[in-house]
Image (cartoon, rainbow, N blue to C red; front, top):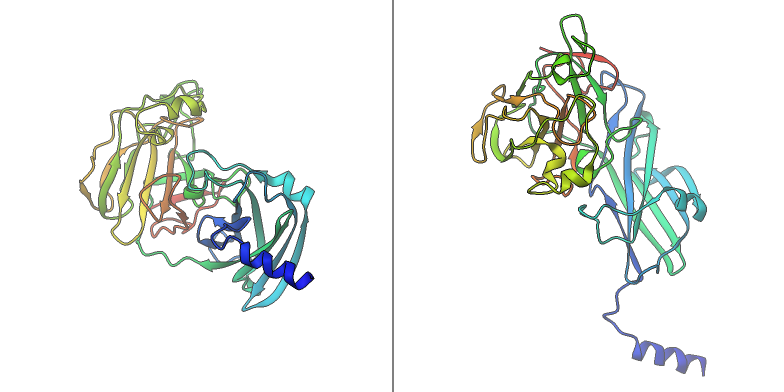
Amino acid sequence: MAMLFFALLLLFADPAAPAPFSLSTSPRRVFKENDGRDGHGKTESFVFRVVVRAAQEGAAEARMAVLELRSAQRVMKSLRLSGDAIAAIREKPGKLSADADAAYQFRLAFVEPVAESIDNVLVTLETDRGTASLEVPVVNYQQKTRLVFPLRGDFLVVTGHVGAPDGHQERSQQFAYDVVALGPHLELLKGDGTKNDDFVGFGKDVIAPAPGTIVYARDDVADNPASGNQDFEKLLALPDPPWGVGGNCVVIDHGNGEWSFLAHMKRGSVKVKKGDRVKAGDVIGQLGNSGATTGPHLHYHLMDGPRLLLSDGLPSRFENTSQPMPKPGVYCEAR
């Protein structure tokens, strides 16, 4: 009787019925980055989100996750997250993100010894509807574009990558830099900081970091007061969302699967338009305070596509800086 019942279940099962849930990552490709100022530190970091898509609403509530950090399939470390631990880091993807249709996601961050050569993470998630596993390759990115820093002279990275405290979190910005320009004595201000013009870098030339074609440019977003603006709803209501968050911004296609994004430039300063060709070092605008900012600065990141929020961020190295991969809080010079 039991065998007959099981056979009937197979006979009447819907072969096209979707699996209860599936796993993926944000970003799609996970890159690790050396933590040393010179790129030769003893540890390396990588960060990604496990994205859970469920066939039915509420059908994949997490009970436990097991994480195996591997090197050439050898397990170097194993971690277990309880359902409560996952609930504490659980997030709903943004409505404009590439994962807007997901049930939820949770962020995982690692700092591991370089000597262990971690090259993949096996994620096994147990839910109320079953268990699924996902093998996540973790690799060093081989940059294709030779980049110069988009500001000349002394500068300071104030907000860095996703692995750093308060670093950029959104997938296309995972390896982004928020940069302030400094004066000849490494000063940030030439006044009391109540006006944009009090900042040494305000109006400083922003240059193309490499040759390419302009695929997006805008110059219509007003500069904020020196105190900045984090009213995302207001910025998203501007024409052509979500680009208003970047203020006056430019995207350069380098023609090799890499795109540069430069944001928050001064209104009226952007000198390029869609379709223009630029060379490395060409002035494309001036450092400003437009978009989602807390003060005058330049935002820069490299990504694998032309669309903010939908592309993945890429690690970037510069050929003319005192640190090839500048770290937050450390003074640097672009020669």
